[in-house]
Length: 190
Image 1 (cartoon, rainbow, N blue to C red):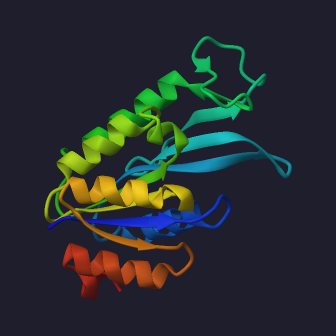
Image 2: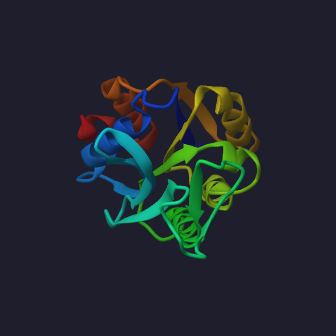
């Protein structure tokens, strides 16, 4: 059975940092894929989010403060504070949907993060569903979400027929042991 590890917590709790650490640690042993979103700062102020394609390490813009982008590609979606790149979300969804089909085994696939847009059926939902549908027995997905969306994500994972393990960010060694065990390479990865 394929495994999904859900890393949950509030904004700023270390979900993305945990994913970055795990991806770097796994890179030499297994195929890593998916997306990780990083906050973009100007000084100490968050001005948006960039998406990192985990397999290529390429970053591209995803979200910016409203008023910062004057381009038809950038649209407001429910949140007046931010605008969203339609081409950025399209690319992120493509990265996710191809993550489960085009790589060797075992795979470690990151989905950072399932948020309010996805709960509403938008944003990265198409890519998340593609990952859930395409996970093979030898794959592990790491999905991040805020605490208030944990039950929603767990339900989606269970409905897709995958084993789910939920944990908070910060203890990458504990997460690493779950990933290694699920991939069947725990001794090699330690």
